[in-house]
Every structure is written in C-alpha cells, then in structure tokens.
Length: 309
Image 1 (cartoon, one colour):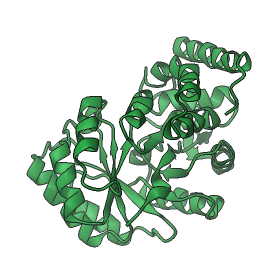
Image 2 (spheres, one colour):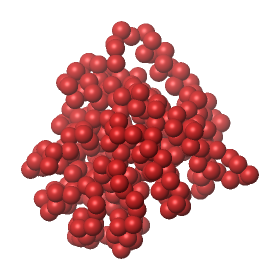
Image 3 (cartoon, rainbow, N blue to C red):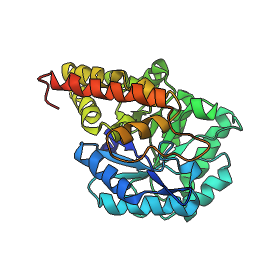
Image 4 (cartoon, rainbow, N blue to C red):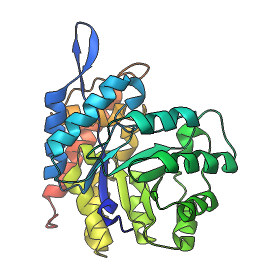
C-alpha cells in the first residue's frame, strides 16, 4: 500500500509541562498552542509521545490522555502517529498494542528494544510478532544512540518484505552511508526511509530519502518543513539556504540531551515552559543564553534574504 502521507515533515511533538504544587503536570493549553504552531508552520504529520515527547516519564494514563488530546486538537487535518511503542520486552509491546486506544491514529512508531541488546534475529522476531497484533501500520525506529543496538539495513529490508504492516523506518543511526544502502536496496518505494536526525535530513533526501521526523520542527516548523519541501522538489538552492539558517541551532538542542534543548528553544519562542521531568534537568543558563543568541541570528539571517518559504 502507498503511505505517501508520511513523506515530508513529521514533527515529534514535545509534551509541555508546568509546575503545580511542586510537580510537573502536563500543560494542555501549551500543547494546543504547539499543535497549532506546527500545523500553521506546514508540517505534514505529527508524532505524539515519542522520545521528544518524554513518553518514558509519563504514566500510561497520561500517555493516553496526551494522545487523545492531540487527536482531538488535530481533528483530521494531518495524520497522527503514536510514538509510545518502544519496549525492551516483546510481550509488553504486544500488550500495549492490544490495549492502547489507537482509533484515529495513522500509525505507531516503534523503537527497537534497548538495553538487552538483541541480535538481528531477535529484533526481527520481536517486530514480526508486533506486526501480527498492531491494529494500525507501524513505522520502525532505529536509534542506536539510545538503544545500543543498530538495526542493520538487511534486517529492515527483511522486515519490509515480511509484512505490509511495516510502512517505513525512522532511520536515526546518524550514518548516511547506512541510509544510502537501505535506499539503494529497498525493493519498493512504498517502504519509506525517513530521517530521524535533523542535521543530515537534507543529505538523506538528496540520496532519495522520504523526509524526516523532526525535533526542530517544534520551534521552527515553517523553516524546517520548507527546507524539506524544497529538497523533495529538487529546489536545492532554497533547501540549502533554509538548512544553513538553522544549522547552528541544531547542536545546542542536543548539548544537554533531547528534549532539554528543544524545550528551551520553545520557551525562548514563548510556546511553552522549558520544564522537563527528572532524570532530565532544565538547560543550563550558559547554554540557554547561547541558544537564544543562535535563534536570534537565525531570525536575522532569514530577514536579509529574498527566499520565500
């Protein structure tokens, strides 16, 4: 089947918090504001409760509430992907796929098992079992920096051939050579290869990639989705300009971990507070000041140009 609506720019939404009675609680007015900001900015779909959404620190009830709120607020304007589907236990993943209310979701995003470091065969069997119970299509998620286990291209291609439930992969190995191998050897373009690393997205699209699930599109959706859109049309002059505009912001977003940096950027832009849940901590004052300077520079950079997004 053709899942072309996952081409372009997806945004891994942050889950905004505010402090009440000494506890971090979900800030739903801010979440509404963020959703409208990214949709107005031109993103093609949203991912709720991914790594950037701090799902790992939320209770099951909080996760369901955030997903339900996001679906209601988006109201069918773009597809919604549920990102709350990584697990170190295959049985736990199957249980979640069976029990979470996913009506209205276009797909789930499922990271490979972390910590227990399975073999490629173990990863293959893990996902194959998930394919048999998932009520919606699944986007695989390869992020070895977090899982300590790289899902090799051969395994991804094997999974793509094994079940039509696997519609693509969010490839966040940071290895452009690996991504190129996957792009060259996929047997159908219906299996999407989506960048999971904002900084190499332009390069991946130039090699035939299908877009991105982005972090920076939370704070700069128009600029980043404009870059992706231009690149996918072959307008590399515009794409390069927009890529350069945001280039110096990217490293600071990850200087103290994700989503610490992007929440700081969102606070600078007045979209939400920079509150994160422990064991994450708010960005240090020094890096916050540097990030603010780079965001101001990016705004000034755009103001001097005649490029229209």
